[in-house]
Length: 312
Image 1 (tube, rainbow, N blue to C red):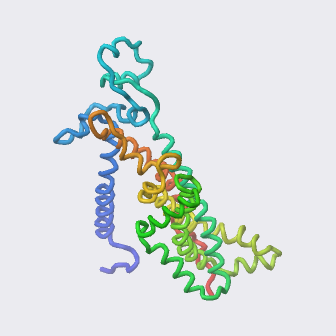
Image 2: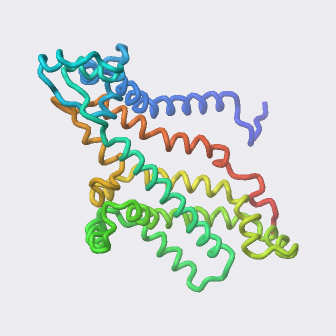
Image 3: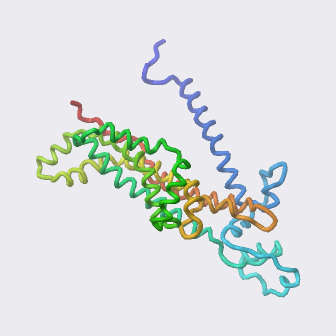
């Protein structure tokens, strides 16, 4: 009985599939639990033993997007009937809605800063990676190592100098300041990842384009960029994940105007303690943009078939 050295046996496929499914289920348990907690009431969210089956409630999402204040039963009885389901949920807790919360603003700050820094990192990183890949640059290896070394430094080590510098430059608690900072941190990753992808794009494609009358920029834009779409998409996902989840700099450098969602979500305090359903609801909504962005770019995450097609 012979076995192929390239084709796995049915038993190997079964074992591999079982391991992958088991790992996926284990990693999804925290996400599923967060999603479920967002639809619990505060008492159900802290019950022991934990409740797996419960009556769903939108109280967490209502508390996330509103600010509430407690009133006396007499004042509550004097109010007109609830105008919507949100007011009805809040009044069942002997409270009234005082206004909208700041979660929407903080979420939009995350969108602006996260996607803005990702775009800038990819734009600058692609240009730098192309230059390192295609041109002879003096001390290129040393420069690449220096670029990579900026990624090795823990953010907390430079937090205080950056705080003092931003305060003197007027960039504290600004969208521009956070975009520039996250770009500076991400650009080293972008350069190194994209250089590896561009190195695998055969130079013959560009040479053929140049012979046909294209300029260097036209060859880069019309030949290299489409071939490097896989690398650009993968790098964009990694850059966005860092900028989207970054906490230390956001806590230190923002407090109001440019504060993002990560430092805001833990501050969601309800009357009488931490409102876990509202926290879980905020975490669920916070996960959606990165998840959608990754799904939209999923077809580019596999390496293109043209990479390395021409052999020297």
